[in-house]
Image 1: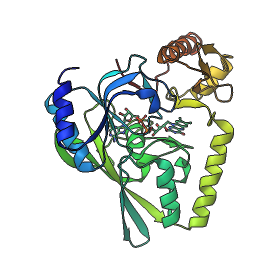
Image 2: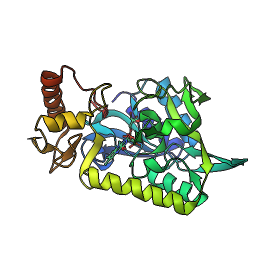
Image 3: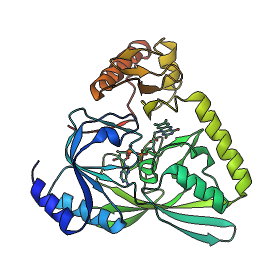
Length: 305
Ligand SMILES: Cc1cc2nc3c(=O)[nH]c(=O)nc-3n(C[C@H](O)[C@H](O)[C@H](O)COP(=O)(O)OP(=O)(O)OC[C@H]3O[C@@H](n4cnc5c(N)ncnc54)[C@H](O)[C@@H]3O)c2cc1C
């Protein structure tokens, strides 16, 4: 890797935590992925800004990783820097009339965010309880369920863009179905401010549990996966339903299998490889194209060489 020693030296001098040759399978929910050259554990927003600006300046390859629940990492690993945001989980609350606002750093997990909102009595995001991602990953993907998305509750997103820290409004974020301006751009999410209604903790908990139980009964939640493989196509049934109608539930390539419980998920039933998953994705795309005339677009993000 170009600049390897220089990067290591810079991280060490600045007391930024990192690992060398770290297995990406330790950091993805589907437990797939070879080694990445440098794996950085960011502790503060300031560190994140510093590291990203530095890597952009020297034109080093990097990937921002939240909880790795929508990431498929290459078997060959990544000859670059993976920046983990998981330790960035601070928050700040403010009130205005009957509304509550909360700024959350990008690494906070949606589970913990949900627990915090419940404790504070802030209502709105109950549908997301059980989505296993981080706030940064959820903003990037505009994660959602049951016809609601995280972007609906955003006041602004604090980002690092072109070396500068900015606040992007909800409209500037260009949220749409499982998409935001963050995808395919150099924008890094540092955190986001959300607005919620004041509610009752008990009601919030009940609603969270209802959504969570619904999720447990319909998704292969205890299997290893990266969530929905494909984005929904407008004017068509959900892709999972189309795959199911093609009789593909349970179909496997290597140790990657189309879940028998929910055809929208690929699960790792042994020691599946990224290659197994990619071949299975291609196979599904071909089958869907042959029967329905379009190629489903993957939702999962690819990391690696
Ligand atoms: C069992 C299961 C159920 C799921 N159910 C749902 C569901 O109901 N709805 C849904 O929408 N998704 C679902 N997912 C997918 C996934 O949890 C979400 O997309 C989640 O928001 C991804 O967050 P993450 O932190 O894990 O992202 P990662 O996988 O770490 O990253 C995903 C993308 O976001 C980028 N990213 C992460 N953090 C930042 C940041 N700070 N700044 C810029 N870019 C960033 C990454 O570079 C990558 O491109 C599910 C996944 C699993 C495994």
